[in-house]
Amino acid sequence: MKEASVLLMLIAFQVVALSATSSGISIALPGCPDKCGNVSIPYPFGIGNGCAAASLNSYFTVTCNSTFQPPRPMIGDPSGLSEIIDISLERAEMRVYGPVSYNCFTSNTTVMDNYTSGFNLVGTPFIPSTTRNRFMVIGCNTMGIIGGYLHSNPDLYVAGCYSYCQGINSTSNGAPCTGKGCCETTITPNLTDFAALLIINQSSVWTFNPCFYAMLAEVGWYSFRQQDLVGHLGFINKRAKRGVPVISDWAIRNGSCPKDGATALMGYACVSSNSYCVGATNGPGYMCNCSEGYEGNPYLPRGCQGELFTNGISLNFRNQDKQLSLQAYFSRFLFLLKKIFSFLNIF
Ligand SMILES: *[C@@H]1O[C@H](CO)[C@@H](O)[C@H](O)[C@H]1NC(C)=O
Ligand SMILES: *[C@@H]1O[C@H](CO)[C@@H](O)[C@H](O)[C@H]1NC(C)=O
Ligand SMILES: *[C@@H]1O[C@H](CO)[C@@H](O)[C@H](O)[C@H]1NC(C)=O
Ligand SMILES: *[C@@H]1O[C@H](CO)[C@@H](O)[C@H](O)[C@H]1NC(C)=O
Ligand SMILES: *[C@@H]1O[C@H](CO)[C@@H](O)[C@H](O)[C@H]1NC(C)=O
Ligand SMILES: *[C@@H]1O[C@H](CO)[C@@H](O)[C@H](O)[C@H]1NC(C)=O
Ligand SMILES: *[C@@H]1O[C@H](CO)[C@@H](O)[C@H](O)[C@H]1NC(C)=O
Ligand SMILES: *[C@@H]1O[C@H](CO)[C@@H](O)[C@H](O)[C@H]1NC(C)=O
Ligand SMILES: *[C@@H]1O[C@H](CO)[C@@H](O)[C@H](O)[C@H]1NC(C)=O
Image (tube, rainbow, N blue to C red; front, side, top):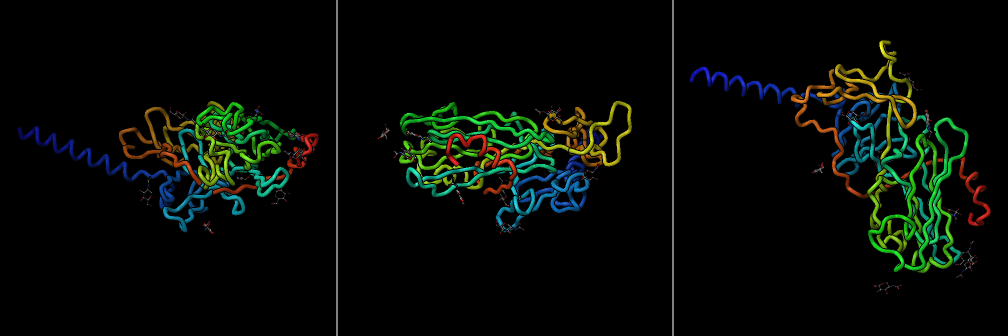
């Protein structure tokens, strides 16, 4: 009886010790905040230069804007910040609020409002995921095109889709985006510099469909609603105030996995024991992962821990909330696109 209670105490003590260890494991650098508002910021990302792997890429640095409640994590150049929704180490993905291109008409010939969205990701760790995003267009009698450049390839890349509808009632809520009211297409890997444009013949539709939209968005996020065709910036005001969710793949872009048996080069990011290197599939570089049976942060020394120790550490995406703001910046290929499509006499 006495022996049994000692055993129980031992077990109880061990449980306490375990949970103490687990709460001591951080996904951020020691001494650095691991959250901005509700969003976990795992290393190599970090809030402020000293907390991010800025020597690998300065774009791992996150700014936490606490004028919002809760505070919002932002990434990118000051002139083109994007809001981070969440970051996954395991999938090497980051979800951000992306911008929407639009064109609005107040008569057959008058453009009242227009915006061309784009990204220049050259030099950053980010490339939009091909499997987890679609290029989407909303509107009637409109062609959306996404154009730009692939990582270190001088050829212009252009893809797009067309949507046609004679009236609101020739579309239906919840219908897939196959060309009646909305359309979508997959994008290429390695896309680092791009913009979303609209080529519209509004003449027979502007009375019921005054605004047209084009965007890169997470697969499964958008479902068509007739309401999205209606009103001035109706879609953005009702469903995309802060932007639309986009999934970006990220990787350590300079360097690659060490060849079998070779020692890693200086600056190699997979520093945790029980971690391994994975070559990037979208763009150059590599990612790190914890070995089977381990969880945590492979980018930190002793970051990968046996599963028992990691209770309560969640590196998965939180539920996305489906709203929010936008910015963008891009460039040199707009005139090329306009040249290609000049026969349409639209620009
Ligand atoms: C935070 O966001 C507000 C509103 O967009 C902006 O005015 C302010 O400059 C931002 N602050 C920082 C530190 O980025
Ligand atoms: C987000 O953070 C606020 C306070 O910063 C908290 O009240 C709220 O419950 C959090 N929401 C989620 C979904 O975690
Ligand atoms: C890391 O490992 C997990 C679990 O084995 C796997 O689901 C995930 O795809 C891996 N991540 C990468 C980037 O290879
Ligand atoms: C879009 O708006 C800009 C000003 O913001 C204007 O210069 C341009 O001509 C507009 N584009 C079209 C197609 O009307
Ligand atoms: C579309 O259908 C709705 C409901 O069936 C009807 O109330 C509306 O008048 C129709 N709109 C047009 C433009 O035909
Ligand atoms: C709208 O304008 C275009 C170009 O100016 C013209 O070809 C078309 O006939 C006009 N449509 C209507 C309904 O007035
Ligand atoms: C737009 O469509 C109208 C008919 O709806 C047609 O008359 C006109 O030529 C078209 N404009 C262009 C630039 O294709
Ligand atoms: C990666 O590239 C950045 C910028 O080009 C450079 O400053 C850094 O030293 C490089 N890091 C490694 C590990 O090669
Ligand atoms: C993407 O870039 C990698 C090298 O970084 C290359 O091997 C691959 O073929 C490229 N893919 C496409 C579709 O351009």
